[in-house]
Length: 168
Picture (tube, helix red, strand yellow):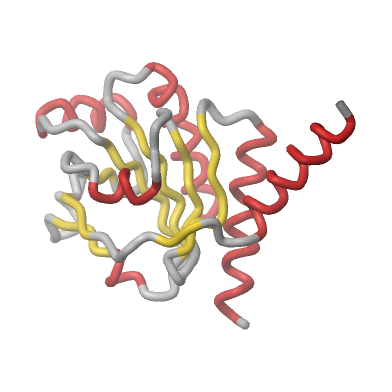
């Protein structure tokens, strides 16, 4: 049992501290962009950023439970453009996003990945799933399910660590 706990601990530390895999630059429809002036969100427009990607689908109750937590994370990092908090949905219908946006009032971009281009690169099979992606587009953290306080802190720590690597 002790070896199992040690192995799980090593995996968690490794997931947070080193890249697991990389994704390609992405461009997705921006569902709440009315005030942004753009219809697509392009990762290339945010060179040197760290992304927190919350993969979700609109009807998922656990995804909806995370929505206020994702807003809180945006509030935590404030207006630091080096940290991009993104909700990335897999649903195809635009009108459903409008209802979700009205209900949750996200303070960060909500993107639609109906073709699942980014979701496939991330390897998402459980919703919600949260990823921290560093400035080189390496996935440096992954979590699935509703965030606990411990998970939220691990996400913040992964972002802070990724930000430190930008300066070096």
